[in-house]
Image (cartoon, rainbow, N blue to C red; front, side, top):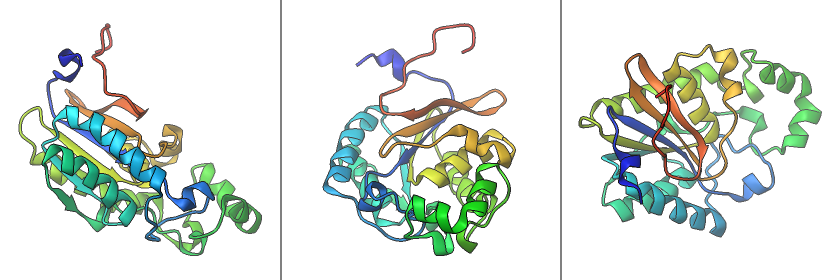
Length: 218
C-alpha cells in the first residue's frame, strides 16, 4: 500500500453504503423496512472492511437498520473501533412504495416518480421529502465529524438515498440537483474531505482506496 495515499490535511468522512440484500436483487424499494444482508452482502461488507481498515478510522457511526449495522460491524471487528448507531441515518421512509418493485412503482405512481426524478419535492409513497432526510441525517454526520481529532476519519455506514442527500447538503448543493450525484453500488463509498471552503467531494461510488490528487486542482 502507498502510504502517501493516506496523508492528508483536514478531517475526512467516508459515507459507506450497506451490502446487498434480497430486496436489492428484486429491485424493491426498501426504505425503512429492516431487511438483512444476503450471504453475498456479508461477503461484500467483509471485503470493503478490509480496505477501509487501512484508512484507520477514528470513529464509526451507522444506521440502526440491520443491513447497515451488519456492514459497519465488519469494519468494527477489524479496526477495533466501536460502532455508534443512530436512527437518523436510516433510509428514506417511502410509505406505500416500500416493498414495491421499481416496475410496480412506475406503473402505479408514474407521475410521482417522474416528478421526483425531475428534482421536484415529492413525498414518495406519502413518505419523507429528500430535504427532510437530509435534515435528520446531515446533523448526525456533522456532529460525529466535529468530534474527530485533527486529520481524523469518520466512517458512516448508511443507505444510498440517505448518503446522496447528506452529500448534497454538506456540499451546499440545491436539493433539486442532488440526483445528479448518482447512486452508490452496494458496499461502495463516497469520501468528503475538509477543504478551505468547507466539505468537498473527493471520491464517489468508489470501491478502492483513495489515491493522492497529483495536479493543479488539488
